[in-house]
Image 1 (tube, rainbow, N blue to C red):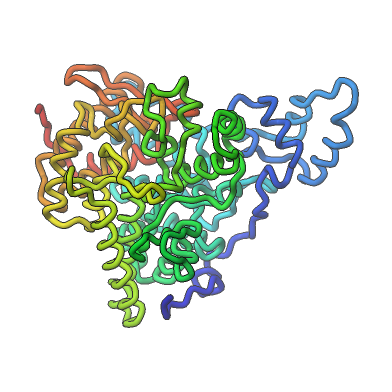
Image 2: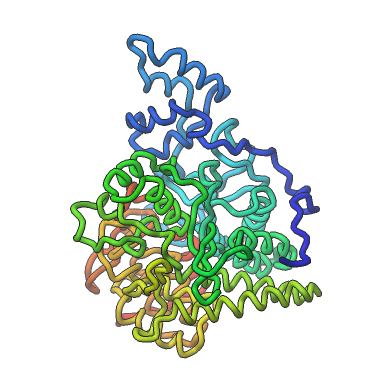
Length: 535
């Protein structure tokens, strides 16, 4: 696709060499033992077992299980306790000193959330990395892809640039080693990625006295190759992995996962969801996994069932159709990736690469204008490529083309109106207009969506709305912090100006605290200052 060298044996890969991890997932490795542990709920949380550190060689554990499982009085829980060590949650019990300012609390959290390669347990699911990194917190004790960008924003605001640089190099190492950045640094995440933000990381690194973004050009090209795999062989109306060829020959991307089995970290939940579906279970599993790649796991955005139409959450989730949907935010981020590669290639005298990727960016923007820009409503909407129709109503992903600089000024003006009228809440920017039991729906608000909306609105001159979102979000986070002494993964946005702020709910696991991307966005905004907004 270009003249950029992408051989993983390049100088930077050698410099970042780390012990090669066994890429077998826990389900691959432990087979019927894995199924039985998850099926019988040895652990309340399905993620606990797949994160356990084995205390003996995995093949020996499996052999011991096969030899003992049919014995009278065999106790599976006792067997697991003998052979596995659960990993501790991150910063679970940390609370600030009474009266401690929020910024100081975040500063203390960085050390609690930082992990070092020397601490990686052997033979577990954790992927080896060459440099230190920050984890989100709670049950999430590995490095996650798109979470990390928003976490890294806070590192620039708290004089921890060296950790930011180390994390950027870790992501380059992952691309060199696996051909893409996995959802998270666990073997069971290798079959999918997350929203592609590595280009943003390289620019952040460069702006924070780190390596120039052009140093990472080979990895940027290789990540693009991963997302566009198979595009040159597609006929119109066909799809392959993450690429869809539309009837006019345009190419846009979707979320995908290379496996069609239950997610190992949510095995019981996925089996239950597929049991409710009218479609074959592998299709449901693939769509659940693809939604996990989106980072929006889960949301009415991906479902056919309207909130309240299904008998319960599981029945509604069984209507998931993620792979049939071309998402606004994914394609905006890929447009930014293509534009970044073109710019960096031009500055490093890779003229042919610059020309190729500038063409990719132009073609994607035209395709987004045709399929993702919904002129009748004046906003960006996801597109159902199988049914050839836009999917409304608007959600917070509509701000992504503003964040990436993909939108025209007229489009940005129209999106700003939609965000202000449909999604602005007293506590910040809502994720969707739909209320449901899914965590990526109203009433929840999330730090990364606040950041992208605010930065995008500022890019196009909508300062007042950007300030309103930022101030309301900071007030929400601050109110919960003052009352509970912690920052959390998501927040239930207030529906009235004087209502009490609280942590968010919904989804398939309890609210987690720590929390990486909330810390990062809040630290960045506290460092920049924020005027009060009483509107």
